[in-house]
Length: 314
View 1 (cartoon, rainbow, N blue to C red):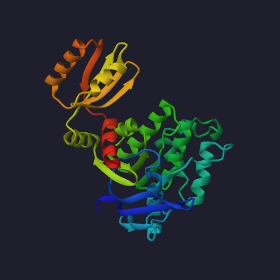
View 2: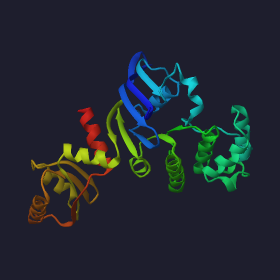
View 3: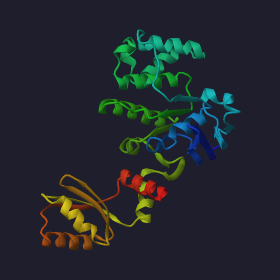
View 4: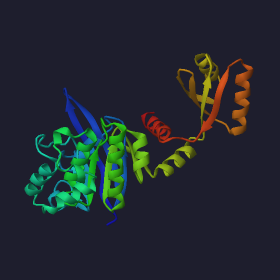
C-alpha cells in the first residue's frame, strides 16, 4: 500500500431550506504515504466536508473512502489509532497548564505519560509546558492542539485550516511544525485557502473547487502544466496617473485579457513572447502612457489557482 488516503467518486449533499446543496461532487484523490500534502480551495469548496467524511464524522451519499486501505466509516475503528486530526478550534481547560491538559488527555486515551514531554518538545513547547493555556497566543494554542494529536503517535495527521486567524509568527510556527512532521515520515494532510502557505509548506498540492479535484502535483508541476495549458504571459505594469485609461486601451487589443487594476498597478495576460512584449511597451509609451514599471513574470500559485478554477466554473 503506497497511499494513506484514497477516495473514489465521493459525493455529499446537504439539505438547506428545502433544497439540496452539493458540497462534494465525485471527488477522487489519493494521498501518498509520507510528507505534507495540501488541500487547496476557497471557503465552501468542500474541503472540510471531505475531511469530515474521512474521519467518519459525516457519511457520504455515494462513492468510497479509505484510510490505510480500510473503508471509512465501516472499518475506521481498525485504523483510528493511526490517525490524528484538528478539524475545529482546539478545546482545552484554560486554567490548566499545557502539560496538565496533555496529561489529562493522555490518560483518557491510554497514551503513556512520557509521551506528554515528547510531544511538547516536538511542537517546540517544551519550555512552555508549565504555562497556563489561558495565556497562550493563537499560534501556541494551535501547536498545543497538534501536540495533542501526536500523543498516540499517529501515522496520518489531518489539519483543517490550521493557520486561520494566526499572525505571521504563528503561521511560521505551525508551518515549521508540519514540515518537521513530514520530514519524520508522517503523512500530513492540511487544508487551506492561503495559497502562499501551502506553496512553502507542502510536497504536493491538490486544488479543489465545488467538491471536485481539478489539479494535483507538486507546486512546480501544477505551475508547469498550467503554463502549458495557458501559454499567455502574465504582465505587470505601473502607470502614473492613467491606469484606468490604459486598461481601456488594452481592452481593445485581441492579444490582451484578464486585466486587473489596483491603484497605479495594472496586471494582464498577454498572448505573446518577450519580443512582442517589448513592442507592446513601445506602443503604450507612444500612445502617451507614463509607464514607470513593466515586466512579465512566471505564474504564481495564485495565478494557477485562478486559471484552474476559472476553467472549472466555465
